[in-house]
Length: 507
Image (cartoon, rainbow, N blue to C red):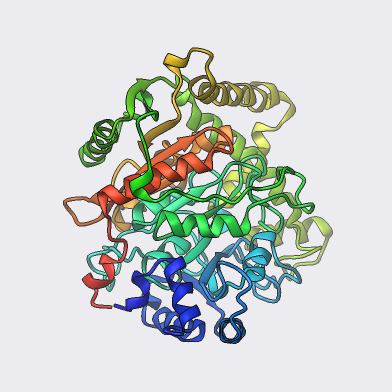
């Protein structure tokens, strides 16, 4: 295992400054490891020439003692639905297989401006519609924690839809990766791959250049191997963006987490939502949930049960709104302006139909058809409008527990499972349809997207099968400082080793 992988981003950049390590050396190792671990299918497109160029420029800056940011020389990967100038951005679909953006998404641009080194674009479910990263034209992504990576179908899934990003971070191919999170697409794979996955408050990070799935819920997410690394990346990419009308326009104040021994939990109020103790929750996840709640209580935090009564309806509302917005967003892919164009040009209508039939997979087509059905005039009030009303109720559930006038009922943090079990085996996962899997996999994660609040998944311990088990923390909007402080404290108590999988495979 590469020794430098044990270092945090802060420690790595300190190594660059004192000359013990160089960005070019670290980038070359990452590119070499990406080839060795090609079986994971985490990267759909490596960018060796760009990585070497950026790493060389970074090395020269450190030689002159003039780094340009906290991420200078840090290897990163970006999900394949964020535009990257002059690098293919395909959404893992045939429709955009040949699309090369002429510009960077804001997330990509801010990483580049901070000196980060891009090692590649990561795999995903087609157009981010999935919870396993198994519906990509490039094939499924494997989880580095799998017992047998060489097996045809007996390996563990990486989760989705940002499975490639999570798998790349867990395998040490990069220090951080960017994913998107619409209903848990960053936190779900983070949970299965044993890494930290942050969904910031809606509007804190720019969506400009993120190819949209559900505009009202899409959030750029961050995946790293530690909470402190996550904060470093968030500080580099967060903040207002004039190119994104949904980004919050107030100035972003960089987060600074206290040292672990200085974190005082005596005034912290933790809520345990009873509705998240749901059907399908494994005994091991329940035990993990209980143990961490006990840890917090022993440290002085006040832990109590709370209720989010509309949680049960949340997954149905999410599914309806998701499909309605998908139908709208996918309308732009017509074979005329950009994207895949069919050879059949007998008529405009035939060209439209054939281009979309060839460019989209069955999952995307099903969501488009369902969304258009739900938006029909006769169905609009009954489905879409009603779902919007219930979404408001779901958001108000969170407001009531975070901002209630009754101090005795108020909580600062919600502690829940991220996923209901450890990572499923691929052959078992594909026995259910994409729709059914999303309903199960997104149960604990999508309410945070509906409310727009921040949430983070952190690995806690191993299951009996030797796979990561993770928990989720949620807090009020723009309360990332407290959220990540508590996450850092838990991380220090459980001492989870995100790189242990590399020892298993003798990498």
